[in-house]
Image 1 (tube, rainbow, N blue to C red):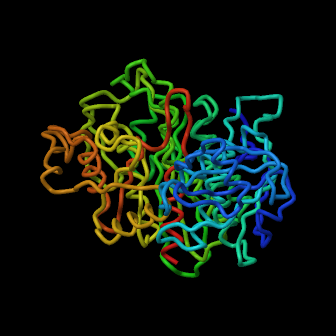
Image 2: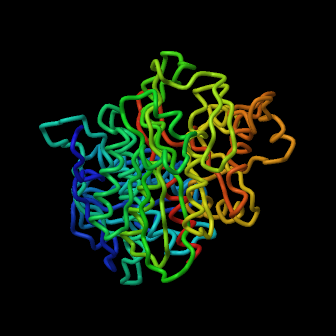
Image 3: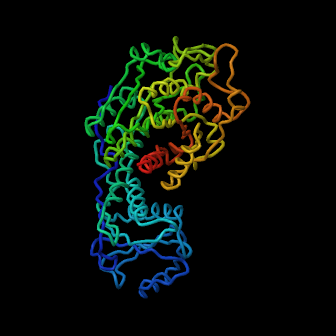
Amino acid sequence: MVEYRDYNFAGKTMEFFVTHQTVEHYSGDCAVAFVFKDKAHQNKDLQQLLELNRFDAIVGATLMLSRVDGYKTKRLLVVGLGDSSLNEKSYMKVLNSLSSALSDAKVKNVVIPDIQIDNRDESWILLTTARVLKNASYQVEKVDAKEENEQGTLEAISIYSENNDATEINKGLAIANGMALTRRLGDLPSNICTPSYLAETAKSLAKKYSLECEVLEESDMEALGMNSLLSVSKGSSEPGKLISLSFKNAGKDQPVVLVGKGVTFDSGGISLKPGAKMDEMKFDMCGAASVLGVMRAVAEMNLKVNLTVVVPTVENMPAHDASKPGDVVKSMSGQTIEILNTDAEGRLILCDALTYCEKFSPKVVIDIATLTGAVIVALGKHHSGLMANDQALSDDLKKAGGDAMDTVWQLPLDEEYDELIKSNFADMANIGSGGAGTVTAACFLARFTKDYRWAHLDIAGTAWLGGSKKGATGRPVPLLTQYIMEQM
């Protein structure tokens, strides 16, 4: 087994500062000037240069200028804001364009002026700016790389604010650090990031942040009756684990419990997946990676909350003793399951973990899983799917997603869909009939969550990107961390 090490998850060291110094008086490497389409800039020399370069200031457009009169910096990066006002989505685009331009120009330090965002205060702007720019500095690290990646040269970002308070910036950086942990775990190959590796990651977090950590082995799970989870792991030489990690900083308050699906590689088992893009099934543990990332962010901020994360983690492989379509297993809850498709394995490990969560007397339970391809058909790569047995919880998650710009879309969880997972040979089947695959998967999980408030996030469309940008995204760490902050 490859030994776990505490990676510098967010790339090279990058410092953030709050400054009272205006961009005109900043004497560092580069300053940023935000410009709207229909507003002339108050600096006449800059305005002439914009007109000379035919800069039309569409959202996210950039132009690097040298030695502009009225600015002390050698370089001035002009960033377009579009029309006369700016919303949250446009600002996210502006920040990503800003980060790319600074990287391309190999800027070492920069100052960013204040900005107005529709319906958002300065606290939101500072947190979001720090989070997005820090997250943009994440670099995919090649396995066993011997040379330091020289891509990231930006060392310091100063953000103008009238208040000399870095609290919101530090929150944004903590969330970005949680996203970086999530992305790094997702990006690791499955021969390194095994269930045992995730357990070592949890132990490392526990040591660093004084958390309570427990790792159940297969013998422990067998004693608890977790036969559904064990039916997935038994086809692999990698032993399954059930990891729990607790941060206690709010007395006797009931904890928020997050459950992250941790299938470190999903071959489909006997119901073998097609070979094309099967390599991306290393990302099937991004639910687990995201809850560990949230734990890192919450612990780093030292929030006054009680948070527990539970990670059922296995490898799903075909073997002579792997589960077969038609097998029936008994879950920890006592309910029986007919396994019609071994590639619908995520719900088989989650259901036992959800039953296990009852021991924590949770305030709410939220599970996060790359669960169904159907959610990509329904929602693409933009929104994570949301289903819940409690509308108030669903509304809170939708609000947090909007605040964090890490959005969800609620899907139904009606009893008519629950009818689709009936079985002639067990209490339920592990797949539905008649479409709505994302909803029937949630209906399956709902049968194990009747004793507490519960929500399910299907992140199969949002947890990673393919193609030339292949890699984990770090979602939904911003959403979940924002939700927890809003519950305080």
